[in-house]
Length: 65
Image (cartoon, rainbow, N blue to C red; front, side, top):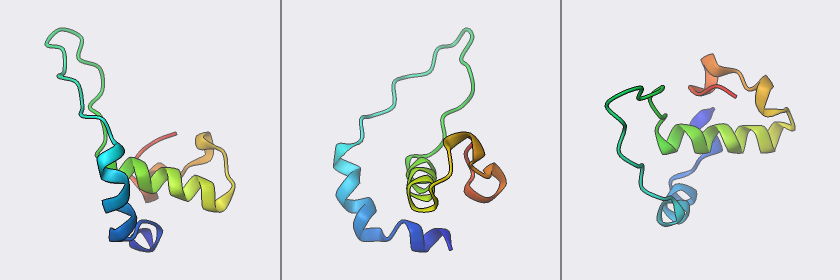
């Protein structure tokens, strides 16, 4: 199901537009960022289903809203 949301061709087209991750701070680093692929799947899922970002099922997608 999730692979249907983000075909390889879409990921290849979006990849050049993504900015590189900044380096993490040593003190108070915060939570770890999710992979770009997982975040993009979450965004596409929200757009296709029409739910709000807060209703995103974290256990299914892999990132929280």
